[in-house]
Image (cartoon, rainbow, N blue to C red; front, side):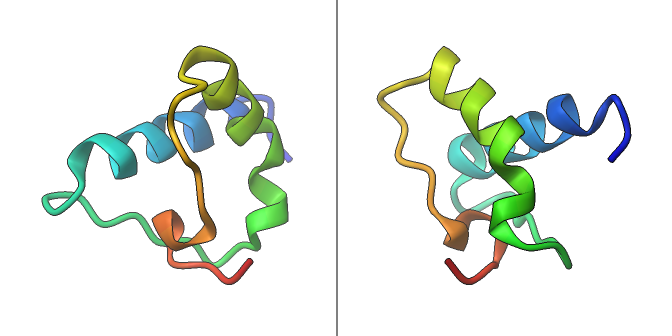
Length: 59
C-alpha cells in the first residue's frame, strides 16, 4: 500500500458516485482493499451508499 492510496481510492469512489453514468471505475483489487478510502468518503459524505458495484467488484 502506498501513502497516497487512501486519497486515490476516495477520489475514485467520489467520481463513481457523482459521475453515475459518465464515469466507470474498475479495479483489479478487492473491495476490502478499499476500506481506508471508503472510511474517508463515509466521513465526508455519510449520506452516500458505497457498494462494491461502484468499482466493479464483488462484495
